[in-house]
Length: 142
Image 1 (cartoon, rainbow, N blue to C red):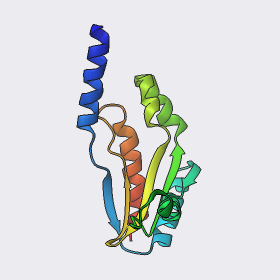
Image 2 (cartoon, helix red, strand yellow):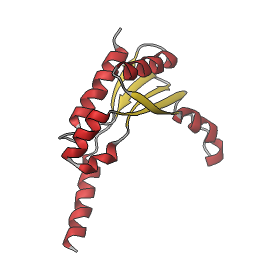
Image 3 (cartoon, one colour):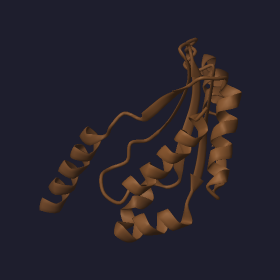
């Protein structure tokens, strides 16, 4: 019973410690931003496993769920992995599997285009966060 209470407490602490995504504005079109992110990921020698078209899904299903709010004009999430970093972070803690695959999103709203990614927990996952930061920096460099 003590382990259940401890696990529940840890879960609440983890949820409370969750940070907002790390974002940056992109000075250009949504199409240019998605191309830049895709190119930066591939330039790192990584393979994009999937592109989730979240914006299209939200726009397509809004009426079905009783909403006419437009959240994003467009929004995509690029999902990919790094065999080297994934092995390293999961050897440090096998439960880091929860963070894989890694994702970078591009979204266009009323205020323009943003690019972002999750803020990962301290420790081994900071190496993944550094990789995501490098990819976004490369994509947003003018």
